Image 1 (tube, rainbow, N blue to C red):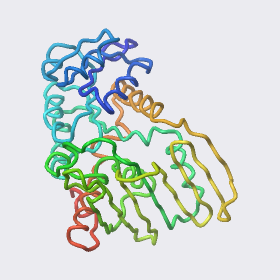
Image 2: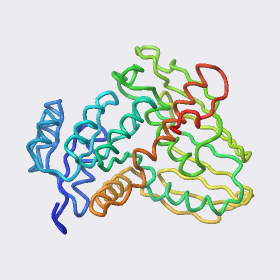
Image 3: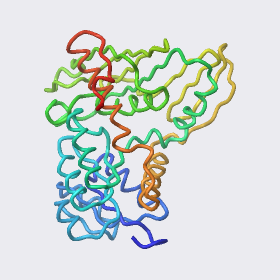
Image 4: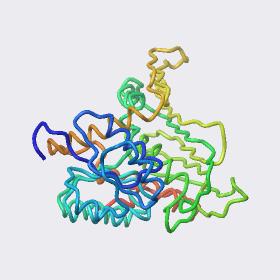
Length: 334
């Protein structure tokens, strides 16, 4: 890495969020695309058709042949272990798509691998880089005592679940996958709850064969007296991703379109529009990743900082299985 020269990034996985990361790298000053990798020939061809960076089917071959300052990985959950191991072996900073891992055991393994190798390991929890959701963090300090929090992330999945429908490959369904963002926002705004109480179902798509949750409702509470719930489903419409914080001095609501700050009567105190899509959040996220590589600073969304998200999800699934309240803190390392 030469000072003032663009950082070189490799992308592993070019479909779905991988395509978004690819576009973000191309659109961000100080970054350049060094190489891309995908096992799907058609997806790889589509990703490389209008760029000069070489394409690979094997990420280990890509790492061996192309000098890179950082890696970005967006793969099915069960395929990330080998990527984490390869990044650690090559001592290359890694930005990995959420979730951190399929379960807490694997999450701790990933974190320890990266820390033993001394590499920067960052998670793609891009809601923290979305202006509206980030502003929510600031406004939360003006709401007085927050006594209620609620997050809703809903849409209807339009494809077969494939690997997402099996616990072994996915680690969980709607709560663990897209709901990871909602869990992350809760922990960012208020910290890890003292207890969770969850129920989930897998009955929204009778024609599909899957056993992970397509719908989950997770209640939670804090010793401070605050309570709330997260509703995560990819089985129904209308599409919505909204987070509310209710305090003794006001209410805040944030979504992709912006944020509204209201007083306790519902009158608007302030209203700020959002960008309306994930594009700016992805660009802000990769720019932060690049800055951390250049400066050595710890990322806002480091892998270790994501362990509370995994603890919340682990506790929620345990709660549903045992039909009782569970403390997420019991799943964190001492």
